[in-house]
Length: 195
Image 1 (cartoon, helix red, strand yellow):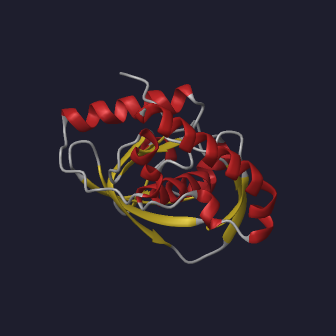
Image 2 (cartoon, helix red, strand yellow; image 1 turned 90 degrees about the vertical axis):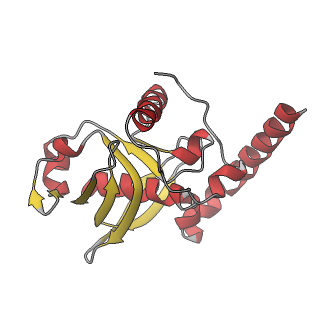
């Protein structure tokens, strides 16, 4: 396993929609393992391929749920009730997302591609995720709570969307100057790397 360099806001790769994953088995398992190691080293709970400079339709997620999160998730795996912990760690290749009817929740989000920048984002409480695992097997996961939020955040990355684009003006305004500084630093670092 290897820790991979992260892409930060201002890097054009974060705006790229992911290409379909076509190589399953050992190559995908290795990439997913590297992504998990990178995510854990940065104390994250999710990571999309765009965030490691690879525009693929792929993300990983993992965290240690407590009893409240287990109850909020109310997971269905391939149509059958299942404990949340059986869905984690999650490797989602070629994900497709359906937002389910119900309550929308405001929650403060952060992102490994936006160090020290956080803001409130409204998202639906429940989602249905169709995806392939490392072996190319198809699964359908319906879930709520914290995992549903992680899935939406990471799915957005696979579509070239970052969480600050989901904020309303009240949430965005206080972080605008931080975003401009981060974008400038990233562009300078990319320019220096090419020189």
